[in-house]
Length: 169
Image 1 (cartoon, rainbow, N blue to C red):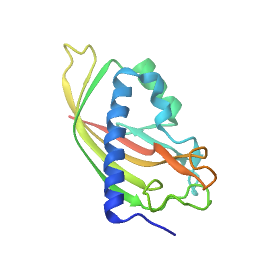
Image 2 (cartoon, helix red, strand yellow):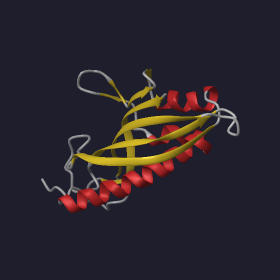
Image 3 (tube, helix red, strand yellow):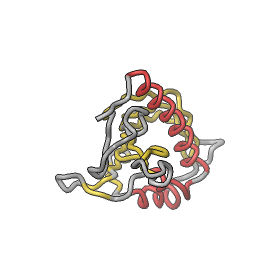
Image 4 (cartoon, rainbow, N blue to C red):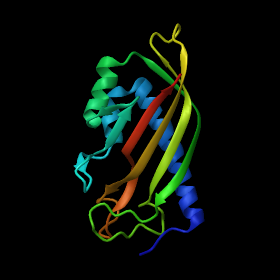
């Protein structure tokens, strides 16, 4: 089993977290029809709990499609302003389906935690009050079988496996 060096893991997770944060919050603000593409496909943990696990202000959201529908049909316009984010590698050699993992040394098959905080305006943006928010994600690799030319699977981007959003009042 090959695992990335600490330097590689830090670099890959930091760059991936930065790209993810930029893309995800942009989608929430202005590209809501793409929200479900940020999540892992529906699955179940060994204890039967569904994945992705999504909590929004203490409410369980059953799946990525429901999260997208909530933003498209129930949420007012939003403007997120991320103030800070941090990431931490959780598993440096993630294998989703028991197959051989050949992406370990490059850091492409890690899972990591991303913690985000900032402000969000909800409602008519000129009159909306800014509220603080805190959000935590567990990201896993989106495996692309076409990019490795027969060498196994490699991550092409990262998907949300677990999410917990909280407004800070």
